[in-house]
Length: 302
Image: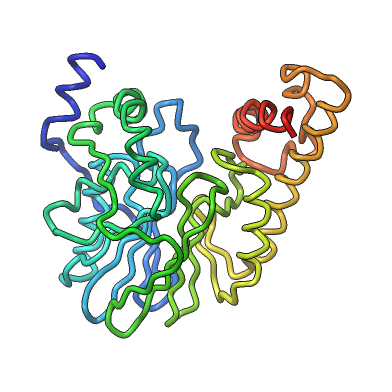
């Protein structure tokens, strides 16, 4: 790790934080900030995923914090424009940096940090590469970056009481990532999927594709009024969005298997697999190539 990066990640954030993140009220007490569709490896700025907060009579729960302490601080400012109630919980839907590297902005609130029972392990395994890359990903906003593991770990299910509303959390086996967690607000029947569901943006595989397809079936059975994906627009037709994601992932799986059976190399497969999905997703070429490079070696051993 470079000396400059060590300086950047140990300094307290003292930068101009900018305005509060813009948020949309999608239901009573529920606010969502929509991230941009940018590739993380292209200096993405820390603001590409959906970030939410939920206000109950007792306090606030946050679902994901963005990709830097600056984005987290701007989220905190947005919360304070809505309510002065205490921030009780910071929930990370999974380990990925765009969802979890804004956590440090909330240390001053002394919340309970909540995540999958495998999240601490995943953070420990990835901390070196995440901190090394953070300066490239977000520039000066890397100052103060920390990976903060959960103080409340969910291995199956767990309910959080915000006062007047209960958040039901569910942990899943390895699917999109090693540490996927969903959140369901029983008061409004709003479901947060994290990156178990992508809308508009090409789904990205960082776990087990076969397991992810099974989890999609489980998500389809949840009786939600609206769904907040990890990336893309909030929808009142979560089943249709899951169908689209399943179509892409199933096509990817089938095409890669077929290429392996025909003796094609990974390089040949990258040029052909899932090309029928071209034009249906944002950032398709970059993400689809990465997906193939990840799953091809795994499927070779089936």
